[in-house]
Amino acid sequence: MKKLTLNSMLMVTLLFLGACGDTNDSSGVETSNNTEINEVDDSAESNANEENNTAVEASVEGLEFSLGHMNSTDHVQDSLAMRPWSEQVAEATEGRVQFQIYPGGALGSPPETYDNIVTGIMDAGWGLQGYNAGVWEIHSAMQLPFLAEGTAADLSVVTQKLYDTFPEIQEEYGDVKVLWTHAADPYAIITAGTKVETLEDLEGLRLRTPHVEGGEMIESWGGTPVSMPAPEIYDAMQRGVIDGGVLPVAAIADFNIYDVVDYVTIGNFNTSLFYVFMNQSSWDSISPEDQKIIEGLSGEQMARQSGEAFDTQREDAYDKSIEEGIEFYELEEAELARFREASEVVTERWLGDMEAKGVDGQAIIDEAHKLMEE
Image 1 (cartoon, rainbow, N blue to C red):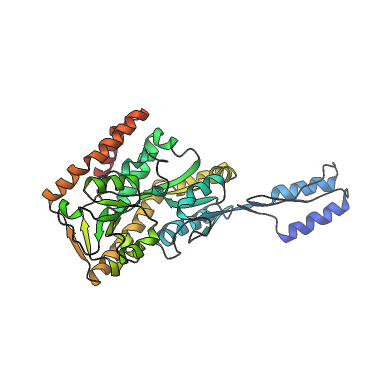
Image 2 (cartoon, rainbow, N blue to C red):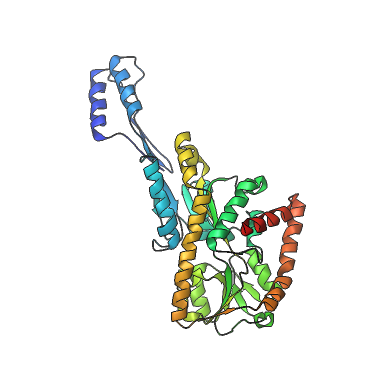
């Protein structure tokens, strides 16, 4: 975080007034992970120094924070969510709070993003929750099988509302300031070579998944879950290391895997959660008035906007996939019921874990279903 301070004319005024008063005035520069420039007035009770103090108090200071993410500037979460949001914040606070966006993992790799926010290496950041397994176990209810009805915008609003509703979910985020959370569009089975029309077609298939719940779901179907960073998916599919993945349709565009994908099986199998966090100390450095402004621009409305960005990407990915000859197949209802039944063990395991924590997991699932129906 940088503190943007006095203009050059005010600096000249301060120096001139200081020369007219006590010669013991000093200025100091303090540096840390953030950069601050502070004018330190002498404590002498002269008229000149009183004028100095008045001038300093009248100055308008602006705070500049870093916001890092793993995507390119062309990614929809940068161009349609984070960047417009940062511009809105700067405008609404009249420049008092600004965010400098660092794309492409410039401030840390995807698995490092959360820790880098907590420790202050970056002031704020966007990331995939699946890279930090076990941190948000309660909120991960949204990643359970077949809890993904609707669009990415719908699922994102549900995700944010669950956070807003349940204190036990909020407690999982105690190390950071949550600006908003959101979800991907519903996941599909995306494969090379093998068309998945029945549960048996998954036997032995090696499928990439971004989180624990997805891995358990794939295992319940007879497949083999594989965990790997998203940028490695293309090469892994091209070389036959994996047969595909359980991924959002938008990911075909996101990872540019059109020429290694043959089939997409639609089933609204699950989703993944994403976050936009801020370092708590960085957040605390913002005035209460500007905090209120930022909160008014974040939360549910940005969850929806982030989801809509993925929905836009999904539409583009679908259209181009059809042009590229990728075949889309929607499971018949009877077969889809078999997938549901096989994966019930994943939800049962999660409910058991919640019971052990003293959390009413069923209430969270029920609320998620209720919100999806609204």
